[in-house]
Length: 270
Image (cartoon, rainbow, N blue to C red; front, side, top):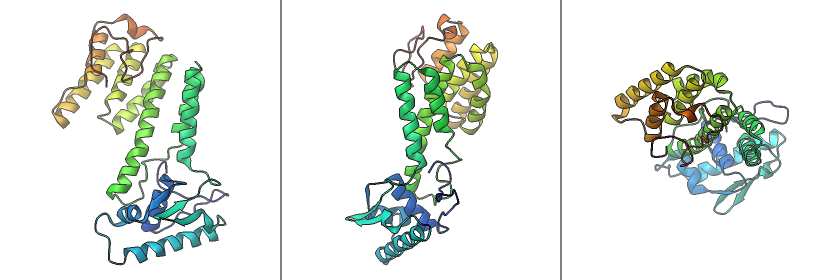
């Protein structure tokens, strides 16, 4: 799920269905693993709002093909069950990379609550390393599948931002700069990313470069959307111009969206 959609057997060999329709059905079932997905949902994921007259029969044929492929690969056709009002994919004996990601994020959150920031950052790094490229890139861009990919991407964004905060809090801002620049090239309007990049640059002794990053982002935002950066990024720029003391304090809380972020000027959370 974390990249192009792939199905691997116990030996690590790719057994991904070649048919885009079969991949789409399997992706929807995997995203809702161990829960019933209605035939209506599956139909919408395949044909949007214009299903053919034979859609019910066609869906049954696709499910049959998936079961046969599971059986041929030694997985067992019983993992895909008919259960009203649709189908259920039982992954209790299989491994889904999305579940691995969620488990690592949960362990990281626990480590952070216990004050083990090094472990928390490492676990988030392991979780993010599971990504293999754009989410579900080899599936048709129908709204339902696009929505699933967006929901998965949102988990990645949240984990990325928390890891940035942890790495900066641990004093590893200099090593983070290169990664942040790379992500900024890919996501030019990701405002929270620029907050981390500006702060990492400032703490690395690159104050002018930090301010230049703000100016470049502001220009891009104005050209693309006709709007100014959010209050938190503007306040960071002011803090850098004033060389506020908190900027050099590794213990300053950086959790976004909370009033605990220590800035000398007031702002609205990002």
